[in-house]
Image 1 (cartoon, rainbow, N blue to C red):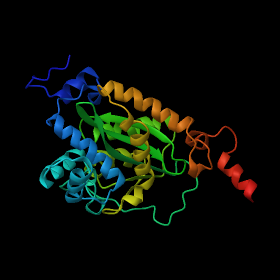
Image 2 (cartoon, rainbow, N blue to C red; image 1 turned 120 degrees about the vertical axis):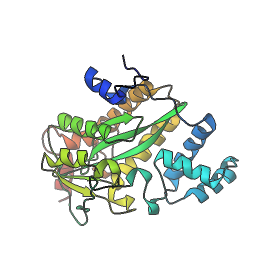
Image 3 (cartoon, helix red, strand yellow; image 1 turned 180 degrees about the vertical axis):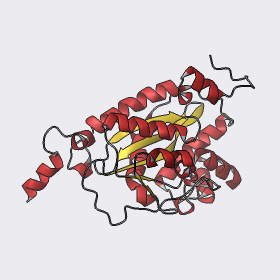
Image 4 (spheres, rainbow, N blue to C red; image 1 turned 135 degrees about the horizontal axis):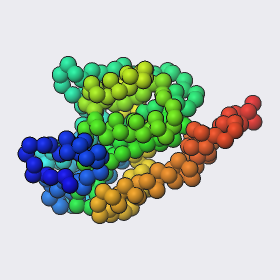
Length: 286
């Protein structure tokens, strides 16, 4: 029912009228060829292993390790499409938008002891390779318990699917965080994001420039989901990827033990049945 060639009504407006989630549409044909998509997959793996590497070092590693003779400018162009850069230059997904409607917030978590669920939530966006295409993944995580409250896929890196993830996290958890930490990406400095969270009286916190460690827990989540799921499979389309990630995040929350939680699962610490299991471990130690 969506008419891609309709010049009088945009696809976004058509989706609003039909009450269709625009991010659920089939991804548009990528503007990159198969060679570019293959390079993006390798660049993503290298970036996870060495996030401080810039285009020159990645170019050299592609040549030495994978036999790929490519230029620095091509590597840099693909990194921009993917949304990654060396950490000291700040990830591309973290570049704030321009104009008065985009405002930064201070980092509120430095030296702050976070001791309970729903005290702080955090979010981030990452690149996901997908067969002959790619998309972006956003997730909302509870800082204290590492529980993933919601996640969304999109073929564009806009604020809409981030807002959808936030609203779903509120619906699932039935709670609101006191503080919400993000990077300095244009999605999170936008007026739409600030107004949405401000309407719930949530304090906004943002990582310092190039300080990926300020949001380190969700960075570790990306490493886990890619090495344990994404890099092991070849997804035919967005629907197949969505189903696979749904199973992985369910296992992550409810089955996979977490070392920082004394071996408990994130969800049994986030929503314990009875006394919090981490508190019981602390009581034994005392």
